[in-house]
Length: 100
Image (cartoon, rainbow, N blue to C red; front, side):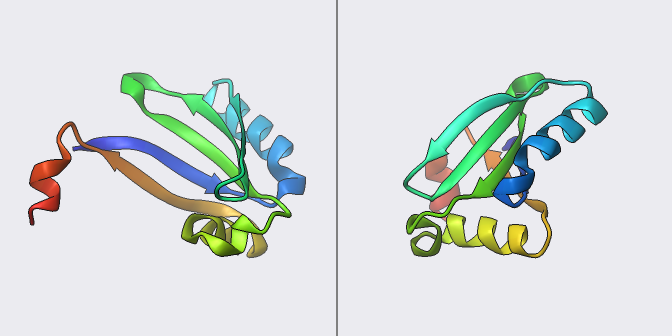
């Protein structure tokens, strides 16, 4: 099990400024991840070492934001002013994890 990525959520109006600010602080460059219609979100990602990355994500004015748990979480953090949303782990084999 390893950290895959960390997510930072912001209002859509602040995504460009946040990407610039975090990129400058970390010394990296974000890649436009595009729009994710399934969740009603848009993101940018910054690759780090060992396949990890930082994600900056924002909710869009899209019905999926309220229909999907991820969209709801992004919208809530963004509405509260933005901040760290969470972290995601990756595993090589899901079977032992789901067996518990």
